[in-house]
Image: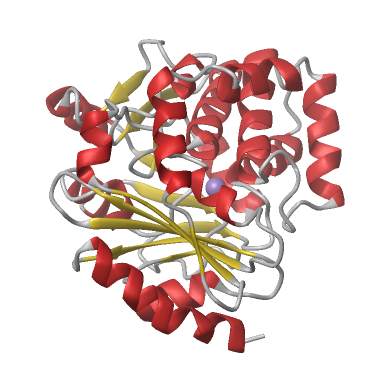
Length: 333
Ligand SMILES: [Mn+2]
């Protein structure tokens, strides 16, 4: 499939638009900026449209402030113009149009040119023309590296820094089970190309607003461990978020903390958003499959060890439902 994507791009000059999912994370931002930097070096015309802005630390990614980067929620008319002009659309780090959010979804589903997906999530949609989808990959950034390697081009510092960022964020700094020898090989090649791991780490993880620490403190003081010791629950109410001056991105990674308690195999983080809907994140260890669990119980999904979902119940009811259902995920072992 990589070869088909490359030969399609090389057939004739293309106007390319790169997109990622809503609330873009390090892998979404890194794969889009990394691929854009590479394609620019190969003289392609490339724009990026993100559905909404990422967290403040991710806005410091190399190239994020360039004039080829657009944010749909900030400037829908400019973004629409870019979609109309483009003849190739890349969906990076998502595999179904709805993941860009309700306001931008029609731009993806109604796109008239060629649609190319590069993604590592489960259950890819069938409406794309060229699909490079592998759930065994640590990150979309790893797959973008595969593409560039096959294309034979040179990786500059800006590209390397962004791709390494996606590897670092999607593998939890290389500690999740999805980390493979190939992941580490690629990390080595990106360092060779100029990326510096501690610089990326400082920018992303040691660059937080005070609100983030205050919010983590509140959430962790709400920690519940179930009686059997296998599940952990942390939650934040809308009143906590407004009191502590929540900024987008402040709760990113919080769900991993619950998994750090000895014996815990599955963790949930519940955040009450302004519309009173509950946004859920799940993490698990080993064979405990939170992708399946989230699909079956919480209108969600994702990866085997990391997934998300939604709840229309209040926080107390959501916690009760989790307590009465999480054993399904354990029993699948
Ligand atoms: Mn990813």
